[in-house]
Length: 151
Image 1 (cartoon, rainbow, N blue to C red):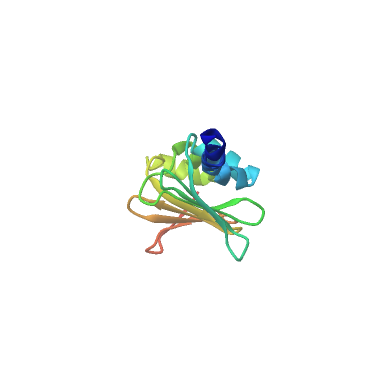
Image 2 (tube, rainbow, N blue to C red):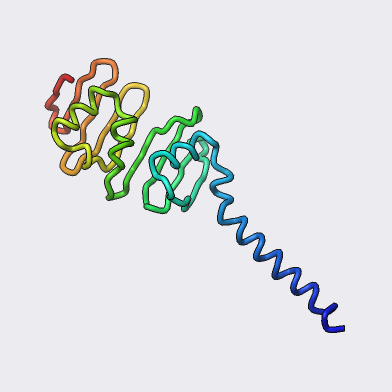
């Protein structure tokens, strides 16, 4: 008779365990597949700490290694922020325009990129000691003091 009384309790515990296991992957399951692929490619093995969609339909993702990501409505990345840590060199090489990457590489800073943001007109790259703004149309790089370089 005690087995019948314990059955609802055991079923409740079992359902709780199943739901807890499902929740750990639910953020991955909620991510649009282009965002999930981007994270898997450039931050392999990372878990998702948080994920939300802003009022402007911008996707914000925080991954376990403290990197923050933002994606626009078209699911293109707009911000990749290491939050104090450097970004993977493979991301820098693959995702920056070739001329900008070459410029950063010539300065031996490919491993010192902390944040990258972009929009249709520019890329902004935060290095360990400065910020570069790259104008897509002209290929010009501007430093915070107004100094410019052509790539």
